Each structure stands twice: as structure tokens, then as C-alpha cells.
Length: 203
Image 1 (cartoon, rainbow, N blue to C red):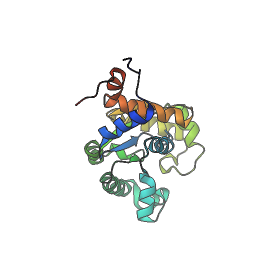
Image 2 (image 1 turned 180 degrees about the vertical axis):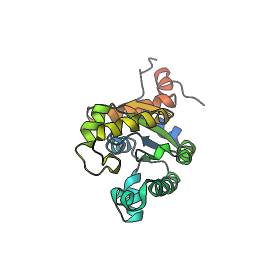
Image 3 (image 1 turned 90 degrees about the vertical axis):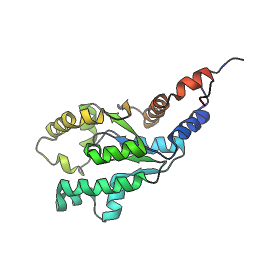
């Protein structure tokens, strides 16, 4: 009997969902990396609910993220963000997109490690600049030199993002392409591609 080179997508997705169990797929990365857009696509591919932590925060606080930053400052915002993410993580499996600074919080990282699989969308500076310059709702970029701010954030955050379970380079390509690469990377993380290639099922 000839083994197929890989399982059909539905079988591969079923295997991935089986390995995930009640855990969430959690997107981390800098603003402009595409966590929400790619996260939605991945959620659709895997037939999972999609949650955006910033939208959850705005829903519970009845204020926008920029308003929260302005009124309470970043420290208070991060504390609220942590509480919201910890609560959301209890409801997996799902796909969760987090704010750029969320993964920098050690307790949030621990909660994501315990209840999810973290996926870092790694983007180059020029791509991020191109995307964030089109939006005026980035509190951390209210600066005379947003590029310098982004460079500083990259140097501070990328070593922490690099501790994620899965890293997927993102670029200016169709969302479907990047989302498929994320699902492939998750399958590799769980060793699903090896079992698919050999036709063997791990007990």
C-alpha cells in the first residue's frame, strides 16, 4: 500500500485539534505583525472561535485602548490586559490574538504556556512601519520618531517573543499564505507532519 505524502487538510487539522485539546493558539508579536488578521484566518481554517484581547479589554472597560493608556497609563493597562487574557485562556480551545506588550508580562507568559501554544509572527521593521503608519491608534507610537520607537521595542521584545513555542516569519503576502504556514508550523510543533508522512499514528 502506497502511503500518501501527507494527510488531507481535514485529517491534518483534526490531528492538530486533537493535540491542542483545550489549549488555545495564542498569537504574539509587535503591532502591525498581523496577529488579528492571521489569527482570524487560522481560526477559520481550524473551525475555532477567534478572540482579540484588545477587543475584549475594550469590551470590559467600555473604553478604547488609546483612551485607557491616556487615562490610566501603561502600567494599569498591562494589569487589566493580564486579567483579561488569563480569563480568556480558561475557555479554550480557541485562537487568541494578544497586544504587542502582553507577552512581556511574566505571569501572562506562564498562563499562555499552561493553557496555550504561543505563535510569534516575526516581522521586519520596514513591514511594521509600513503597516502602523497607516493607523493613528497606536499609543506607544505617539512620538516624533515612531521608527526609533519601533526599533527600541524590537530590541526589547524580540528576545522574549523568541521564547514562543512556534515562530513564523511574516511578510507582505496574502493572509491565507501566512495562515497556512502557521498551521503547518503548529503541526510540526506537535510532530503531526512526521506521522502524516509515514502513515503511522502515535498511540
